[in-house]
Amino acid sequence: MIHSGAKILIESLIKNGVDTIFGYPGGAVLDIYDELFKCKDKIKHVLVTHEQHAAHAADGYARSTGRAGVCLATSGPGATNLVTGIAAAFVDSVPLVAITGNVSLSLLGKDSFQEVDIAGITMPVVKHNWIVENVRDLENIVNEAFYVAQSGRPGPVLIDIPKDVISAECEPSVHRGLTQSKDFRTQNSKLSVRTAELRELRGFSSSSDIEKVVTLIKNSKRPMIFAGGGVVRSGASAEVKKLAELLGAPVALSLMGISAFPSDHPLCTGLIGMHGTAASNKAVQKCDLLIALGARFSERVTGEKNFAKNAKIIHIDIDPAEINKNINADAYIIGDLKKVLDLLLKRLSVDISIKNFNTEYHREIEGFRTQNSELSVRTAELRALRGKNFLHPCFIIQETAKALGENAIVVTDVGQHQIWTARYYPFTGTQKFLTSGGLGAMGFGMGAALGAKIANPKTPVVLFTGDGSFRMNNAEIATLVKYKLPVLIILFNNRALGMLRQWQKLSYKSVYYETDLEAHSPDFIKLAAAYDMPAFSAKDEKSFSIALDAALKLIASGRSVLIVTAIDKNEKV
Image 1 (cartoon, rainbow, N blue to C red):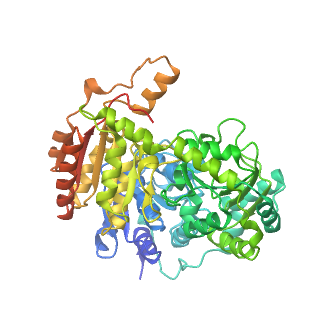
Image 2: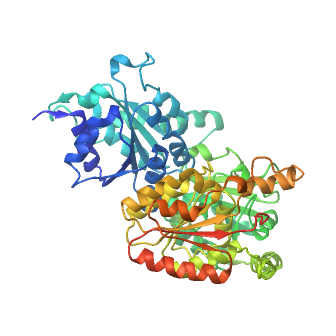
Image 3: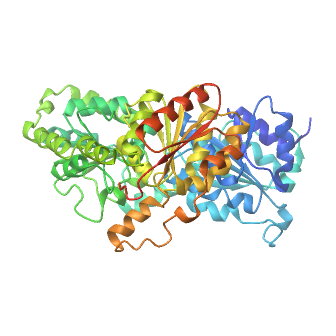
């Protein structure tokens, strides 16, 4: 039997466990869509309203499941519209397989209609990409793509398929099976090349220096843990909790590490860095040992100088490229966090001398937690707002958390609401937190929320968004309604680009140029109604509680709901 490239592609995706594709059709990929139609009982296609949101939806699918998300776009502008979503997945280490169509091989490089060099464009933001030049190679390339996306430090890959390759045919015996090419993995992998370069540049050694790590921990009197997104990716939250309790070490979290450690745990100091808590930022300057777990030391965390100035640094990460990149480590271990921590815990637990807690250090950390308590600040702010036509973000977030329970998937767009959620949402370690951390892509939230909901139909999904971000992605309401995806959307409406406005006040003498959205702000309630989505407005605590109760009843019946909340324009992170 002879198979077309389109059929080989879809069968290969199914063999790799793909059950959902997020995409938007175009001329270069119509053969693929025809094959998708024939296989719709085996693989579901979700039609989005914009290709960027297809990439974000595949991202949300992947972050919420750990499996690679898949998105599909046509050539030219369809392919370039995926780039922001691919870049967001790359920076945050999300396994994603992007598939694009292109013009026929004979037309490549001739400025043909809807032709772009998408492989060249995406090269800096993928682990690897392929241009399929022969239909006989297609199945093996698909298999390799999934291997690369999900192995080691996860990340996005891209497969670009010219139109004539999609329509070309070959015998099934010609294209290869599911085994990945050893030569590809060891010689041609972008990650392998990058690692080889790093060995030469930084004197990287492949041997794990676990003895040095154990010695540093045993000699420490004021240890601290810095947990990043790698903890979430590797499923190592339980091991981090054991390590923290064994050492009596406070735990600070990066934005990507939110949900990796229970926020109500006595050792949790919360978000660290530019928008972090006083407790985390002061504690890191007091510790004598900082154990960084799956974190890349972003400048939003470290600032420009003097970060952890009194501490030795231990860095544990799966990606050798991160070692000594931003912060020099005194000791490091390269490997999967869950496995490394399990080994480390066994080594440490046999030596009870390491439980030599520094009580003065812990009293000082606790002082940071209570003196600058988020709770006391929030209470004062809430009291001041009562009687006004504004809601405090803390109240909205915490009331929503109470209503949804401990298994919710929490999604944000980017801006003030993102940081409020990271700081105020009571993550217990069972929820998932999906946000565009490294790229900070406004418009990420709606696609990610619908992708997460499709992947987790029985789990509550809430999207916290701002009016600026929501205006970038509200067309995806059509997708939520079409596929009957019950997602709760909480819109923080301060009629401004709040984070930028905050910076303009602090650094630009309150010159609020082009960050005020009030003059041309849409009626979000009417906008939702145009898509047949129920919507409520809330201006105070009572009206929000009523709206939330009504929304949850509608969500239980299978409908998405929007709640528009009035936030003071001058409210700051």
